[in-house]
Amino acid sequence: TAALSDLKKQAEYYIEKALKFLFGLSVSLGKAHEVARNNYDLGVMHLGKGNYSDAVFRFKAVTWLEPKNVEAWYRLGTSYLASKKPAAAAAAYRKALSLNPDHEEARYMLAIAHGSRATAEELPKKIPAALLLQHFEGLAATYDREQLETLQYRGHMLVAQAARAHAVQGRVDHAVLDLGVGTG
Image 1 (cartoon, helix red, strand yellow):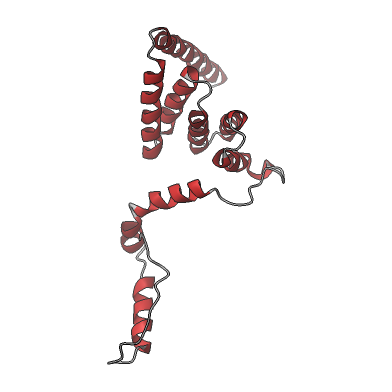
Image 2: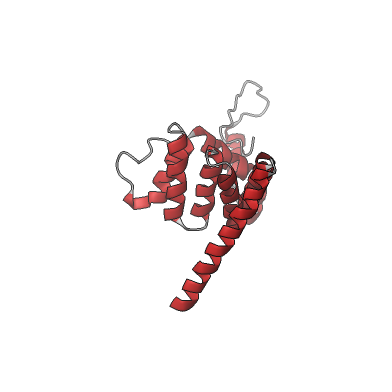
């Protein structure tokens, strides 16, 4: 199996060399930005669909064409992390941070990639707002189905029953504040 592993690494090496050559042609033809943009969009799509190896390839292509593209390095790190390759993810996040030291999400994800090896300085004090927004926007699309159908969530019904039990019939001066608004 060691020989097979070595053969696989060699094949990946030569494939990457050939692809870099082809992407180099797009640079010489003046189409680098267009090809990079297309690959970035495809990478985002693959990442969203869970096709992590395809996402890695697309974001690598962008970094070959545009080595200073901070977001491509960040997304490459995210794709590697999703592929359970934390060392490669950490390298991509470090590159993003070298290009933009203020990239909050890259700093946070670098600490995640380091896991228990993270130093006290690397540990985030808070989750970046952009990551929270992305997380909850991702949940919103399937929240009702997942919570109500799959997990059989009934908390909202229990709260409504409890509120009704304490309401006095015929009075209209009750006020109710719903703090758990689901997907909004």
